[in-house]
Image (spheres, rainbow, N blue to C red):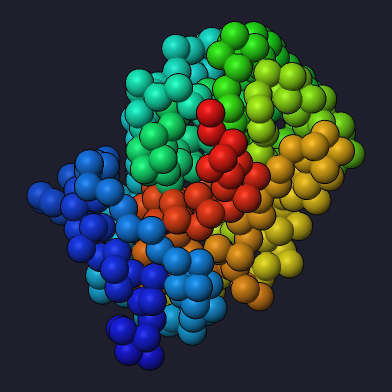
Length: 328
């Protein structure tokens, strides 16, 4: 397969990607620098190009020489300042970072755990383009369903998460945003030591939170979860650089680890919108490389680079639930 054939998504994107990332430089063995997001707008890649690139991805064998981000920086490619903009483990409130048009009267909120921040590179592009005032309420390890989650690092109930959920509900009741976008990781969530949360519990808890959000927001949209790979992408790709096919995961296995059906059901039950992101990532398999872009920074988070490249398709999907004439 020629380079042109395998890069339908990046034919317009590479000039931008060249300035989006600060690639690895310096001595071998030195710590990899954190990729830096530039102010240059990302291109709006058409859905047809995204789907074509996803369809061609399983045929890629050797690791592309111009892989972006490079494996050395992929794990740190978040695309935003998470230390500043995400709520810390012990904190139960935050003054949210604001993106897009800070003076806009159109308030949009992205709310969730680390997956809320994961989509921020795309959402900040959309906010700038559409003149939204975008705020991030994100707390890693703290999904939005009204469930007391288990703090798996400290082996105790994650009560800070419960308090954060109450804080966000109170803040949004005051802000009354036009749109709230919810994004969560449902993979391997627990409510006690060794006690997994069931899809039914997840659906019920999410529905309760969505009802609360809908009392404050004009529209609420749930982003479906991304598939979970068998192996962390950077580690697997570094071992299998001459044949990356062992780093792919079947769609069946990757999607069985997340509860998109429960997400969609909760959205329908409460009148919220729902966006499936699976077509942007998988055909019969989910691959860690699409075109020449590293898609995943571990097993269950997208790189900031790939998320940012999805700004066009994400905007199109969101506007199905939040059309332009919904903006006052």
